[in-house]
Image (cartoon, rainbow, N blue to C red):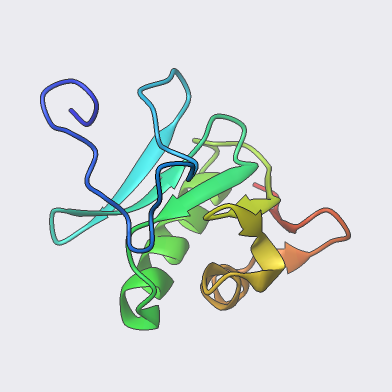
Length: 111
C-alpha cells in the first residue's frame, strides 16, 4: 500500500536530495512488527532502510535472504544502501550474517 494508500515514511537522515522509494514493479518491502524496515529496488542493487538497529535489521536481512533462497527474488547483488556503497552501510553486517557474501560490486546472495 506504500505510495498509494499510505505515504512512504521519512527515513532517518533523509534530505531533499536523498534517494526515495517508489511504487515500482518488482520492488519489495520488508516489514517488522508492521513497520517498514527495508525497501529493495527491482533487481536488488539498491536498498533503503528505516532503521540502523542491528536487532531490527538482522531478522529483516534474514527474511530477505530467505526470499532469495526460496526463489522469490532470484540472485541479488546489493551495491548501494541508503545512498552509499553497501560496504559502508550499517546494513552490511546484517546482510553478511544472513548469508550475503562480499564481491567487488557489493554483497551477493544466490538462490
